[in-house]
Length: 101
Image 1 (cartoon, rainbow, N blue to C red):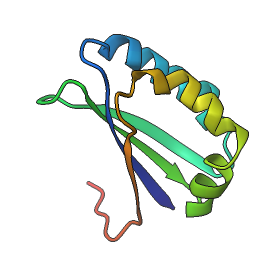
Image 2 (cartoon, rainbow, N blue to C red):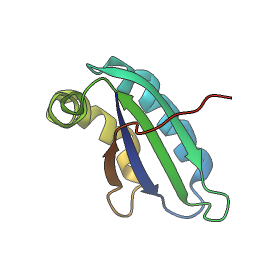
Image 3 (cartoon, rainbow, N blue to C red):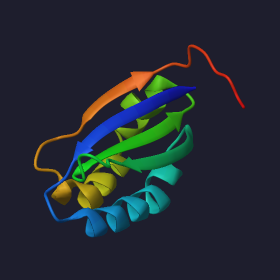
Image 4 (cartoon, rainbow, N blue to C red):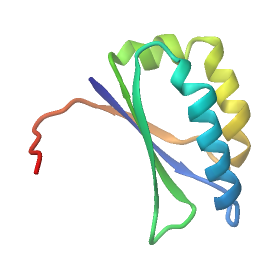
C-alpha cells in the first residue's frame, strides 16, 4: 500500500464549503479510481485553513499514472480546486512500522 499525503491550504473562511466539497469529491470521484483503498481528511486545529488529505492506494502508479493521468483527475480538481490559492503539496509514503493497540 502507498499513502498519499496532500497538504492542502484553502482560502480563509471557506472551511465549511471546502469540507462539503472534499467529501463530495471523495465520494463521487476518488472512490471510482483504480487502486483506491480508503481516504480520510484531517483538519488543522492551529491552522484552520490547513487540511491533510490521506489516501491509500494499492500502488504508486494507481495515483501518479492512472488517477493523475486520467479523466478522473479533472473531475476531482473541478470540485476542490477552486478552494486552493496554491496547489497542495503531495508526497507518497510506505509503511515502515505499525503497532495496533
